[in-house]
Image (cartoon, rainbow, N blue to C red; front, side, top):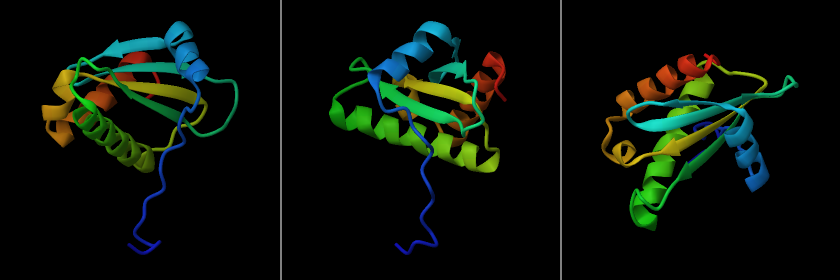
Amino acid sequence: MSAAFKASPCPTLQRRAEFLCVAAKGRKAPVHGLVLQALPRDDTGPARFGFTVTKKVGNAVVRNRTRRRLKEAARLLFAASPMIGVDLVLIGRDATRGRDFLDLQDDIRRAMRKVGVA
């Protein structure tokens, strides 16, 4: 694929400590297809995303597919309306893997409104 058609990925949370900080201090919004945790930061950097799917969802293949769906939905939303100064963690549920992609995007939007970052 040529570079003109590649979409840039969202900035991501990398370390376990970052995920734990968002879980401990951030706001949480469970919706049908996922759980969103959000923590505002004191800087003006772009929003950073973290993606996780527990073993309850299925084996590694199913979890990775679910995580890829979450990443793509977040990437498209972030490209449409970039955010700054917030860390977001999206936790995949069992319902995430069978959820229609547009419904999954709506779930993310609804969760972002619930935590007050949209």
